[in-house]
Image (cartoon, rainbow, N blue to C red; front, side, top):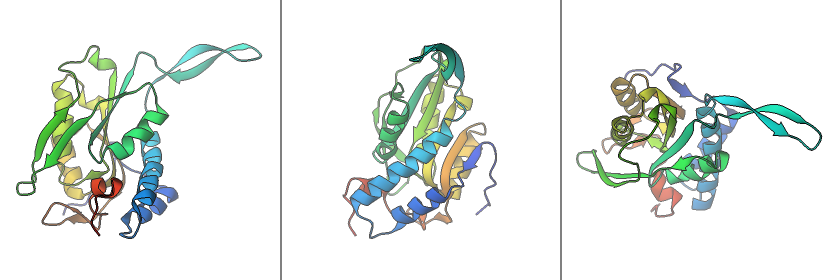
Length: 223
């Protein structure tokens, strides 16, 4: 498999807490509660990194002692977090806590176990966005494996009028195959991940990975 080079579009976070909580969620003996808590902590680090390029503006603020100008998120920019169901929900709550004003727009698909292609079953995005140039989209999925679901979701937002430069894909674990699939199809897409693992197995699961993120988040994982 081709080696993935980090760039301004492929951002692999280097942080000791990422390493620590990755080791927690990789462990097959980690309980569902511990797994969910570790995913939330990883999600916080990932989302903070993903949104660091959001534009800010200076607005007047009245403190208890005086008035001043203070920078905050540009109010003309709309932030959308788009979790891919169901595993993406593990990152959506954290994202919403960090930016409560953001819109949460769910997209749902499952993977056909034979073809490994995504099968759509839910789409909570509008047909078209007003002022699409002022929208920033952050697609959330803990696992970027084959890249099929990721490509389908990015393509959906592009069809809705969002420029690929304004879309960021956020994952905890990524496979080289998924990174290459996304970056080859959408060269201007920004990808933020905590780790690029070794490869995929014949079933399309990331190795060494952590198993099925959705099953482990919602305690339907059979050990």
